[in-house]
Image (cartoon, rainbow, N blue to C red; front, side):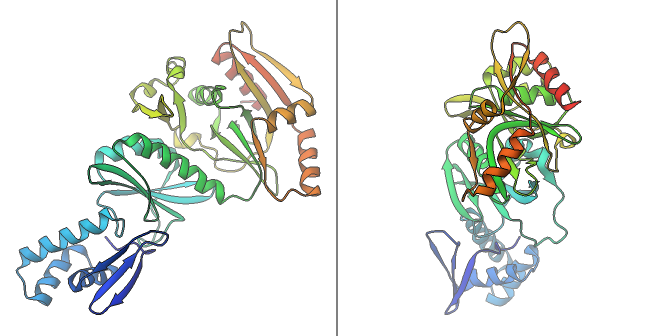
Length: 365
């Protein structure tokens, strides 16, 4: 365990003043705390420091071990040092991040949500990722930190899980050079993808989950699609799928394990988070083969109706979609040319299986 690399530390007499960048507190350490801090920062093994303390201060080894444990535990609770639990490493949209879990129970609840994004630890143990998230237990509550800065605290994990999922997605989103951002789900074949835009509650996540359960497509996203500035290809932003209770029974035939996932409260609704198998995630950008606006209802047959470019682009912008600023004449012209080259469809369906077959046919899956 080492003090976090991004923490500010300055000597003061025989002690130390420490702060988290962007935080709102200063921590003043006495000489013994400074001794421990500097030994840990130099890379000395945790187990050897109590004996160094005993020799340096002329105290009993048991007292040194107790002082060491109490001091380090306090730093960990304040987000000044590495966590007590386990760190896992992840990658999404060419961006790496890590999540620290305080104990096995918390890890067992949250880590499966991100299992499809997990990667091997960096070769160097001291290597920093672009974002370091920590889930901690503080004074009987769960806390979420990013790079040591407090984000949220709650008596239950629900708010922490929701905020963590949103912040992971936003962190990766902000690292991508994009020209258009679209509220949509997306699934891919080997060389192209289909977008499924729609407002919240339109059923795009349910349809994407059903398609993944059939194991004939790859996962791009269930919430936000970004078009790469250079190629206008869709960049995968595969956060965990958020599936509301109304979809659970419909997805049971293809995702039986969904019933065993933890139920969380999100915006007043029961939801389960679902992550596909790692092998199903589309890592590279994909050109868009078609854009389909799904509409679920009591329809006997599934119908796929071609839309004009005017209507399709209007629906896409209402999904909503956002253009990266500043908008230029070149931006508008490029997006107009792109829109003329992508087929737009409206799809009305009653059965998820029929809708999935239609999307798979568009992909050639």
